[in-house]
Amino acid sequence: MPENWTIQDLLRVTSPYLGKKGIDNPRLDAEVLLAFLLGTDRVDLYLNFDQPLTEKEISGYRTLIRRRVSREPLQYITGHQEFWSLDFAVDRRVLIPRPETELLVEKALELAGGPHSPPVERTEILDLGTGAGPIAVTLAHELPSARIVATDISGDSLQVARLNATNHGVLDRLILRCGDLWEALEEADGPFHLIVSNPPYVAGEEFPDLPPEVRDFEPESALLAGEKGFYYVERIIREALPYIRQDGWLMVEMAPSHTEKALRLMDDMKGYASSLRIRDYSGRYRVAMGRKA
Image (cartoon, helix red, strand yellow):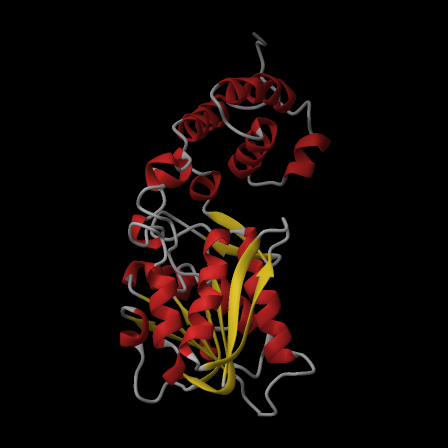
């Protein structure tokens, strides 16, 4: 063991240790945690490989590694997650934003800011179940003229969303409402040109088999959606029409296995003029969307 630990020494020992403990991407996690501890970035670690570390720094790093070995998500340890190239604060009150949810943002921007966007001065958008606010805050960041209402049943989640909206300078264009889906809305809210949602969609029967980072740390209320995982998706599709403007759109993220069922439900209801499903960046159907007749 080295007498004076350097950055290179610590990473050389820690990476295989994390790998033996079943951590995916052990080298990446080791680097991210050390950069976080030292208040720098991963590139600077490589530029300062021979930098000696103090006993306090080594002790602090051990604490972070123990947390990661317990399978606490990296994002909760550092308090940050990137989404749409923006930095979002996260903690155990909120679901960690996933890369696949960027698909919702991409399609929403095409509808609200593209050549087929509504011919209005201000696009009205609703984000149901906003969590940490990645969808709503990103849309507000990209669409300065839009008015966005974001709801969540968890007041704790909305505190994190408010922090992220403040950090990105969009709080003045983002209205946060607490309540269960539509119950959160006030009379002045809506109808909307666009409703987007990434609701819970994990089936109860699947929950025990989730990775421990998800199962043991992320809020169950942001994950579970009944025995089959379709409860909230079905509610949103069935109940959304009165809140959508004519020719407006509903877009919902869901489990890939549920997208075909969601399209059949939209077609059976007759209130949606057209419906389609969109593949995520890994090629799996992830978003179902329908236009109000």
